[in-house]
Amino acid sequence: MTMDAINGRHFLNDQITPRQQLEVPSMLRAAYSAVNHLAKSEPILSVESAKWNKGRLVQWAVDLGIEKLIQTGKWPFDYRWRYFERPTGKYLEVRMSHSAMTVSQTDDPTKQPRNVCFRENKRLNSQWLLPLRELEDEAHIDGLPHILLLHGHQELGFAHFAIPHPQHSLGYIHRTGNLMRLPHEVTSELPSVEETDEEATMSLKEDIERWRRDHGDR
Image (cartoon, rainbow, N blue to C red; front, side, top):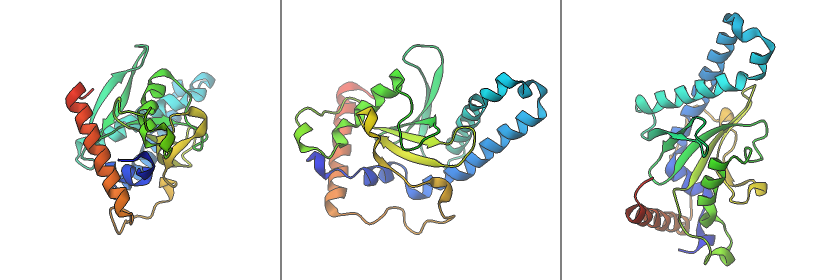
């Protein structure tokens, strides 16, 4: 496998198909709607400090929505709750066949979320997806590739799946279009891809399986 043969879009769609991505918009709309209803109906949430921390409610509602997608079988994945780098709390990690997904609110989908330790460590697992042959000798698999689900913060204006670039300031190796604008039906599971993209993705998945056997599935 050569690193410049890896297609980030193809790998992402291999891990979560366009049809499975269609579950995201309705889940997010329901989560945001529930938070807005709760904020209006509970007087304690009308205090100014609560308004400025509405994002916490959104985070919990989206986590619950993702749990339900998995528990009902709409997403054929597993999930677990993991401690942050400093054990001040836990975050939701969705386990796909050869990658791990976390969720982040952000006000700018073109930039990676703030560089907290656990997210920085995860994005480094994407270094071997870089289309730069000169890094081939340095890049190696040291964990599952990281996929982000990004969505709007106070208002739900966008949602994207993205593979973070290992250099924080450079954005993403691949980012989907705005999921909130997806059509209600998808005619095919995967976009047309070159044979080399398919072969590279399969080779990458084999490398990940070898890493799992050697190190255990973290």
